[in-house]
Image (tube, rainbow, N blue to C red):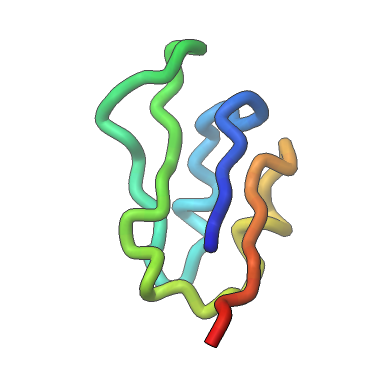
Length: 68
């Protein structure tokens, strides 16, 4: 499961660029801070590598291991 904290995220798109599995996509709607946030459109492709979480400068992403 991928969690994006909308209060911390500034929409820098580093997670979109960093993800080797193209899990994230930019939202087409702005949030209350007038920012297009990323969202995990293809979460089923996530291999839980954690690159998005590690590369986020605002610590706005948390990745939980998938449960079998």
